[in-house]
Image (cartoon, rainbow, N blue to C red; front, side, top):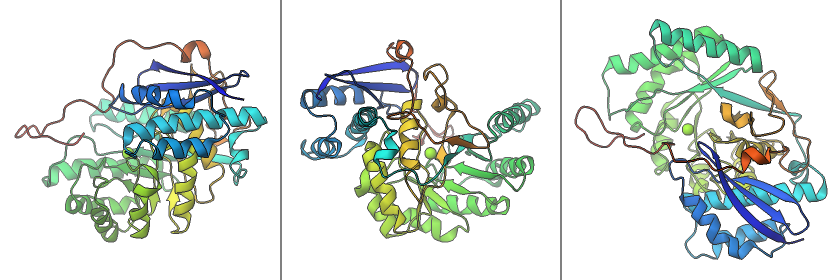
Length: 381
Ligand SMILES: [Mg+2]
């Protein structure tokens, strides 16, 4: 069996797909969506295509090593996302070739279903804002039985903010707790917008409503800053959606800087690397909650790893990840969980007609321009 063809598609907002076809007719799908950089991973996959065509698709680790090491310049979000999409597609082919779900080839499932969390929060405290938030919560609880939800403070945050700004966010968080009760988990993504001092202050205001975790309280580049926050906050801190490969997680582990990690199945090097990162984390009693804010192919790849990792905690799931209109059978959430995938490969049958169309134009996907209103200087997204 040899790789015959590699094609790429842009069927939806925030969704770049790779399709690898073998000379004997197997088809594997991967996702390379890199938020805010819509053209970069497409170019990177094109560069890797010459190497891959004609090769044995089952030598996944070998190809991973070549793509990561042979170009001399290693890592970076573009190469790692391109590598991730290719890796996912190869694991899809391997599962289909052997007639088993990919998780069977990764050591076999250690759980029967995958716990997920949905995105939900109170965006505004106006009557309309609260009514809209309540509607979505009730829909999620009724439809999927979700018991874990994530939101964030939103907006731009300066090095310090007056009590009114902090309180507006904290008040929403406590109201969310009141609505969901003590049996649900609530998490807050700070998107790396705060300084360590401000993050610690805000976390202390939040601690009474008992969050499951705060994510990226500070940016990802400085592990000591992250550890400073963790050391001063009495609940779990998480990070990792912008850390790529085991090498970028190493210092986080060695310094025990967080309780949970969030490697992204389409940015950190694919299924191969996601499992290795999770296995490294196990040694430090750190749990994994893979990041996935893109499409259903990436989400399905994450679930293959979630199935086999003992120290898995919960999987991030945005609405689009369930694959409505793109997968022939969308993933179904019941009681806040998804049943273990049983179909060969990544576990889905894609609607080829939908998946192979190319969307016109480009709208912002985390890119864009962000400035502080007060003085026009650059703010974090
Ligand atoms: Mg995040």
